[in-house]
Length: 77
Image (cartoon, rainbow, N blue to C red; front, side, top):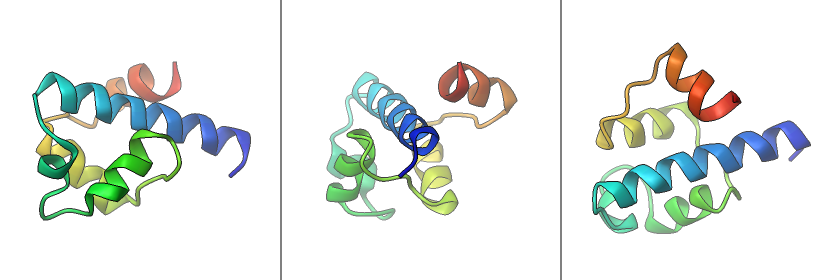
């Protein structure tokens, strides 16, 4: 993983974890029907970048709207 990928991975993980905790969901609840709890843990620790389908499904479960503002505010700045 290069530096840019590591940075994005960490920001994705932090964003998803913060929203999951805010909504009082366990990793298992978030993962249900999408991926494994272990994958959620790896994503939240910045060890794994989810593919587009998983990322969108997780954002949908968390009611996160993926738009240009989200990408700018949460991932790039």
